[in-house]
Image (cartoon, rainbow, N blue to C red; front, side, top):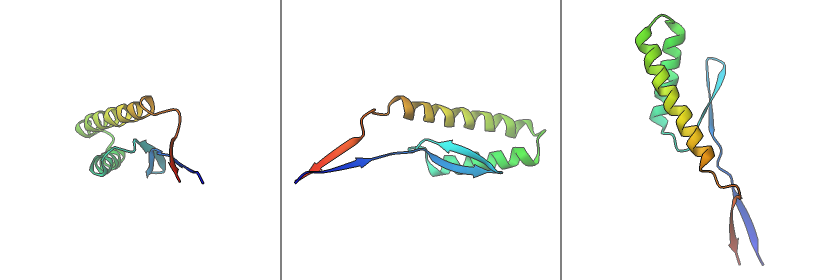
Length: 83
């Protein structure tokens, strides 16, 4: 008897002030929390240039991690055969 199992890894989706934000699966939880806190800080004080700059850096890192995740993703899902 052969049994196939497929493992799917998907991006993590979090909500920040009603907007959905995607993070790569390997993106650390502390970095996700830092991004969400910066996003909330920028929404509260839109003229805080330091927070805007830090948010831009965090957003760039987040997008780069997502691009790497999709670029390195294997087109065929992992299949483990038991039996």
